[in-house]
Length: 390
Ligand code: 13P
Ligand code: SF4
Image (tube, protein in one colour):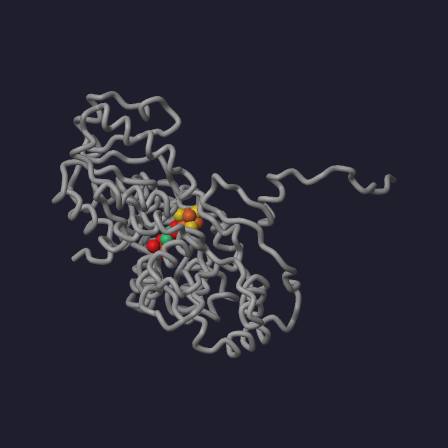
C-alpha cells in the first residue's frame, strides 16, 4: 500500500481559471472571485441569503435566467430569457445593485442598459459562455476586412446574438447592426434585410441558419459558414457575393448535444410525444422538432399544454427539470439520454449568491461587471435597436 504524498506542483493558470479564481483577458469571462465562500453544506445558507436580501431591501434587484439552479432561482425577483432580463434590468433604475444570476454576457448587457449609478454584479466571475467566446473582437475585425476586400461589406448588416461579448455588440452598433435574442431573431433579420442585402450573423451559426431557413423561407444554399480559423473564413469571393446569410462558425456545446437520433429515439419510445427545442440546436434537430423557441417560450408552451400531453424538451437540464416538476399532470422528459447542464450557468450556486448578497449588505461591492464607456456607447446603440424592433 502506498500513502499519498503531498504533490510539489503549482496549479497551472488553466487549473486556476477552471476554479474561477483567475483572469483570462482574452475570454469574455471575468476575473478573480475574492473572499471566502460559505461552504455548500452550510445548513443556514437559505436563511443567510434571505436575511442579506431583506437587509438590502429595494437597493438590490436579483435577476435569474431560466437555466439557473433551483437553489438560486428561489431568490430571483424576476426570471426570464435573455430578452426579458435585458428589458427588466433596464426598467429598474431605482435599484443600486443588479445581481445577475446568469452568465457574463448577460451581466455586461445589463450594465450597458442600466444607469451609470447602478452596479451590476455577477456572483461568480467565471460564469461565462463558451459560445460568446467563439467570436473575439480581433477575429470579427478581420472578418470585416475580408468582407471589405471581397467588395460586399457595404451590403452587409451585422446581427449579433445576445450571447456575445460587449466588444462584439459594439462592433455591431458601429456597423449599423442590431442585437437579437432567440425570441426576436426573425424580427431582427426582417429589420436587417430592410437595411441591407446580406447579414453577417454572429456568433451562433445554428440560430442564424434556423431563423433564415425555418422562419424566413431562405434555402440552406443562401447561407455560408465563415470559419475564423481559416484564411478568408474558408470562403471564396464568389461564395461571399452569392450568400445572403454569412454565418459565424460558433455554437452552443450544450445544445449541440441534441441530435436527430435523439428526436427519432424519443418519438419511438413515447408515441404521441411533442418535441420542443431551443433554436440553438442543430438545423436537422430543429427541422425535425414540432415546436422551437426561447427558454421563455418553452415555459409558456408547457404552461399552456393540456394535462396528459407528452413532451420531450431540447434545452438545458435545470430548466427541463423545473418545468417537469411544476407540471406533474404532463409527461415531460429531457430530449437526450445523457444529462446536459450548462456548466457555466451552474457556477452560480447558493454559496456564491450568499457571499454576494452578504458582501453588498456589508457595503462591499464585489464582482462588479463594468463595460468601458466607448464600448458601451456603441453596444448600447445595437441593444437599443433590438429593444425598438417592432
Ligand atoms: P434564451 O434567450 O432563450 O433564454 O437563451 C439564452 C441562452 O443562453 C440559451 O443557451
Ligand atoms: Fe452559452 Fe450554451 Fe450556456 Fe447558453 S447554454 S449560456 S449558449 S454555453
